[in-house]
Length: 206
Length: 206
Image (cartoon, rainbow over all chains, first blue to last red; front, side, top):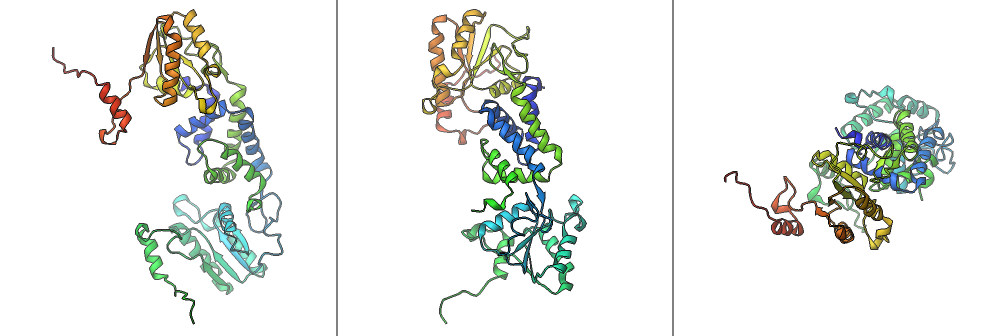
C-alpha cells in the first residue's frame, strides 16, 4: 500500500537486502536508509566488493575451499600434514577450524550436507572428489567434521561407509559440553553425549 | 592471524558488510559466504541497487524527504492537507507515519536530531529550511514528531522555541503505553507519562 512513499531506488535496495539470510524487512530498510546518508564510498565499496566477489574467487581444485589461486594456500603449503584430511560442510568451517590453530592437516570442503528435505543427495556434494583424493594422496586419517546435526551426522555416516574399504583411520570431532558452558543449561542430547563419552581424568600422578 | 585463510575478495566483502550498522563480524562472514554460493544475480542485483541508490535519488526541495523527482509525490499531491506539517528526524519516519494512513498533511525531514555528543547542532539540520517554509506556506499547525528520546525531545523543544513567534499551533505525538503493551513491563518513564497524560474515558453515554 505504502510502497510509492519509498523512492524506487531505495525500495530496490531494500528488496535486494531482504533476499539475504537473516535480514528482515525492518533491517533491510534501516540498511538502505543508512547507506543513503552514509559517505558515498560506503555504498560503492560494498558494490565493488560484490562485483569482485565471484570474478576473483575460484574453488581450489584439490580441497574445494574458496580461493584466489588454485591450489589454495593450505593445499600448497608443504608444512601441512599431508596424511590427515578434515572433511567439512562449508568454507566457513575451514575458517573456524584454522582459528583454533590446532589442526595442521589438509581440508576437503563438501559444499553442503546430505539433505533429502532440500533434495540434496551425495552426488551434489564433493564426495566423489574426496574418494579420488583418498586413492591418490598419502592420506591415512579422515577427520569427518560435518556439523553435529541430524543431517551432518547422516552425511558423516554416509562418507564413513564409502571410505571404510580403504582401511584408513576415520575420526569425528568430539561431542560433549561446550567449554565454559553450564551443565544446567546443556540440552538433553548434549548431556547424554557428554556422559556416554566420558573420559579418564588426568590427575597428574602416576 | 587467520586472515590469509579467507580469500581476499571474500574478506573485502566481509569488511564492507561489517561497516553497516548492526552487522557484526559473524553476520558479515555469513552474508559473504552466502553470496558466494547464491545464484550470481543476487550479488550483482545488490551491487546494482547500491550503484543506483545515490545516482537516482535526490532530496525533495520542499520537505527534504528522499525522492526520485523533486518535489516529492507527497509535496506534489494537491489532496494533502497543506495547513499541517509534520516534522520528523529521518525519511524512515515518514514511511512509518504514512503506513498508519492517519496523517494527511505534509512532512519536513530534519535529517537528524540535535546531538551535542555527536557534534550535531541545529545548523546541520533542516531547521532553517523549516522556518522559511512556515513563513511562505499556508501552514497553521506544526506537529513535531521527533523521537521520544532525550535528543528528540531537546530537538522538539528547540524547534518549538524557534517557531513560537509565528503563532502557529505546535503539537507533539502523544506519549503513553504502547497499544497492546503490558503495564507490568512498561518502563518507569513511559508509565509516568501515561499517568500524567491520562485522558477522560469515552463511556458512550451522555
